[in-house]
Image (tube, rainbow, N blue to C red; front, side, top):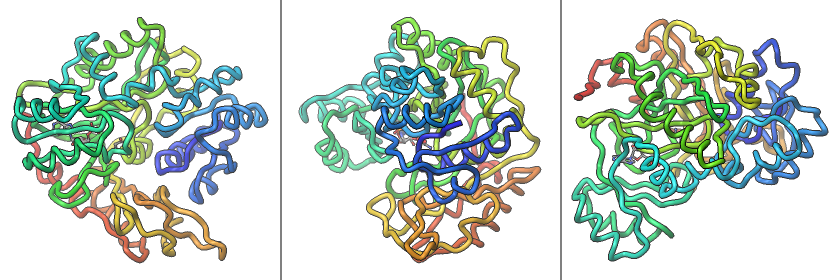
Length: 413
Ligand code: AMP
Ligand code: GLY
């Protein structure tokens, strides 16, 4: 197995693959110091499709799993597929579901998938007209990839206009109320196999304050989720989207991540991602009982029809991201990390310095996964483990999963 990428998601994937008895070897390109503990790292540029394909052939890999969005959008999965190696991850055409918000809206309209009303704007006059049409809170999105940081949700009209001016192409949306859910589904291009739902925390600060990030923590399952939520999302969102992409001749093979809002008017898609979400992957894979390699291989080779549902451990898991000072802006780097190789610490923005010490090397440095029979216990376990990690400038949110534990999340539909 060859995993492409170097973040927390790739560390979690490599860890889960290394525990699958059917997986003989795990390789990662390029990986991070955490993935080197569960597999073998290779210094290959994850954006270079021919280099990744060459490595896969050299390793005689049975399967390549492309983790991050940038290589997917750049067509790395296409290059590997063309080399004849099974690959889990959509080609560039289907990855546009994440790479362009305007394209995602077009697919949703064609497939009848419920989402926020939106205007794709190419000039500031259109932006101002759309802002005034929808009213506050204003939602303005950069059309292209922005690592979770291209969206502003604000009551401040001037701030919305300034954000729009900093984007190349802009989508202005109706505001969606209600709790958010992340639902992952594996697809072989036609059939789908859903994960259990998770919830992510997008804002940098406690109480959902401050700018958006790639995600500051996550937990699963959701004790407050309405009964039948997964089935409803598969029926109303995932399957119609997969069918529409297949109909266009660009089948989606990989993981379709649906970001949803459970609004007072019903379920709405906030966004699609074309890959495992980060940090939701960390707590989800920590609870997954189904061998990961087998099921990703089945998806990559068109064999999900009739596959057994995914099996999950009892209890709950909760991940808390520990970030570096400055994130989601430019983070400080190079600070020595203590506790970074402890059990259930999933590394992301880390590196080894010349002295062989583990140091910070990105905004989201690592995530710590807690487990418990109840969500409260999983949360407590996560925060106890966070206390064992330290570096200069480290910070984390203190309220991951807190509202769910306190039963303060209500779905009003
Ligand atoms: P996106 O990159 O589209 O996932 O947006 C990032 C985050 O911004 C989402 O997870 C939401 O928290 C928030 N957001 C995006 N779109 C909307 C919307 N239409 N209404 C309310 N919040 C939104
Ligand atoms: N957790 C949000 C994302 O992966 O985009």
